[in-house]
Length: 145
Image (cartoon, rainbow, N blue to C red; front, side):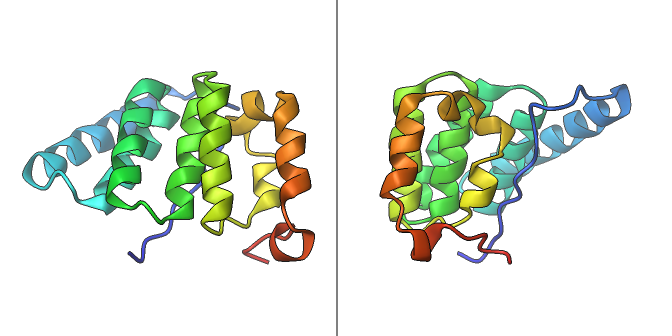
């Protein structure tokens, strides 16, 4: 599957009315698309991101869980799943999802260390243990550099 996931800083700023309205429109659009094609992964990725940006973390989690079944070998899907669990303060599940993302090849540790969606996970002692297990040469680089 050749799509790119966009990581948004979802927990830093409050949305303006215009931003909220725009997200609501996008959500409505993608919900309509998904009624006709419920496994359309690009639409699922987009709506999951929109739900999270809108603060609808439970709905975002449901989408991420669905994507994890449709794309079980995609590291970015499991990264987003870890973010959703972290936002909902389910640290145990977030740890499992981030470990799965890393085992599948997620490499952007630089972003992982500053992503606001993972703040709850980073505040857990297990996060530093996870980083210690990541091979430095293989993963401790920004994949986009």
